[in-house]
Length: 437
Image (tube, rainbow, N blue to C red):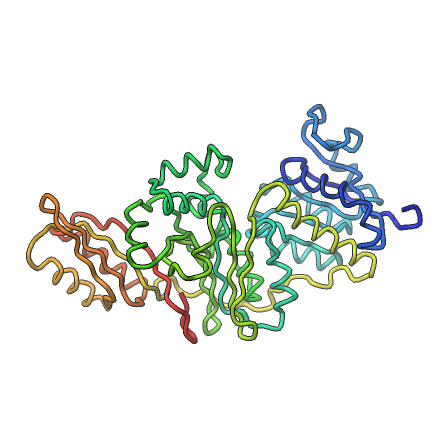
């Protein structure tokens, strides 16, 4: 290795993913000269507690002094795996301003401050890579920026949160209710003690903001994403989905129709024959439609020590190759458009409605009348047998503007014969030209 140039990197954070990155680089270090025509090493690891032993990481490389890393001219790449907003944002900006390249897995930062960070990288002719910020080990950022660059992408749809996918899989296959499936996910380490970010759709929302920005070449932030989690999904909803030939998933959906963007995360009933319906447990998958490639799907492990570290390592090697070939910063911010977000109320979807109603003559006609008067067309309807004077009315609508459905639901809430609007869930419909989910 002595005849090869040495590229030194610093790792910020030695948690699960950081430990995985260090481990993989040690395993592959002998191959680096063949891969990048240079030797690649992590010479410093920034941690909060120097006294805490880090399995597999030499005590000699540990430091709690960020300034010593920032001012070290031999350290040319920063790998940020601390997570959270601060001090990660400040460290990345300072590193880029110092001319150091950055690899990060920080979806929170990229979803909120992507423009600022990408502009800092471009200003200083540095690489800023973030493949691991979305879908763990699945390559998706680079394929969108490079492999599919010749396409106009009109739809990105995916399962981008493994925790919720595991919960819904258990509810679907084992008949568990939500609370039971969540506890099992926590027991197995798929869900945090505080699972709010996952089950409320916030984690998926950040990832979809990043994907939409890249796919449509127009900046989307976390606050632009319409988000609904899975906490109100019941075993009964899952069962009805099966009866209609659907599987219920928490999906992130981004679409660009007539140069207007719509980005959301919500539970959705998708045909059981669709490829995404068969993505189970903690796996992730992203489904893309482009005008040239047509449909393409990327599937794999969306989290965990080594899958996420795999994505980080891919970025690290890409940066090292760019350094060796003098072409850093060649793929910067791809948001060269300024597309508007579609007004939420104007979005068109099909919906599954589950109503708890009194068993009386004319109830179906009354419900149909309210829907019709609000421009909501019924596609399918089922009335279940009554129990103790109460029955369930299940309706699947045709595509309807969200604002019209909202108006109908407000009227339902005022009708004495309707005890409860138990569920309102979006339903996937086959894509047609200029007409998506």
